[in-house]
Amino acid sequence: MTHLPSAQYHAEMVGVNHDNVANMVFTMFIYATLELLSFMLLAGIMKRNCGIDAFYLLAFVLQTQMPFVLSKLMLWMMFTLTFRVTHFGADLSFQFDWIAKDCNNLSCEN
Image (cartoon, rainbow, N blue to C red; front, side, top):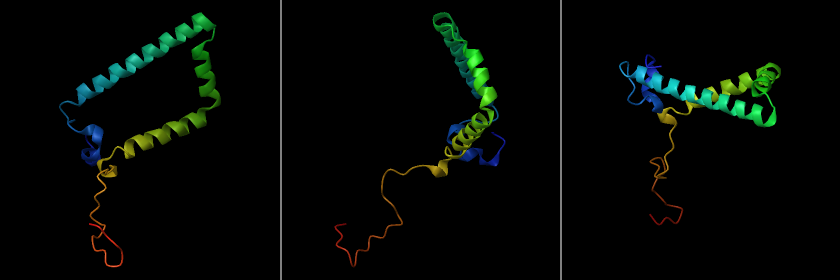
């Protein structure tokens, strides 16, 4: 994503360039590995305590609900990639330049 011209507008890409992108990818790889290990640990606990095979349930859901899962995945990827762009930011100061301060017909205190 650092090669794209729109990378400068993404909030998560601040400070990321061609030199330190490997460090960012490594950090995400460590996070994904920890997520996978925690899922495997939870699956083992479910199997031991309840007798439920979490991998079988995951395979069943992915097999029977594949279009729904893929559509949700694509939708969340679109939201994540588009709404993290800088020019979609929220201005919570409520000082809008486009509101005129001229109050001819209205009682205005400012």
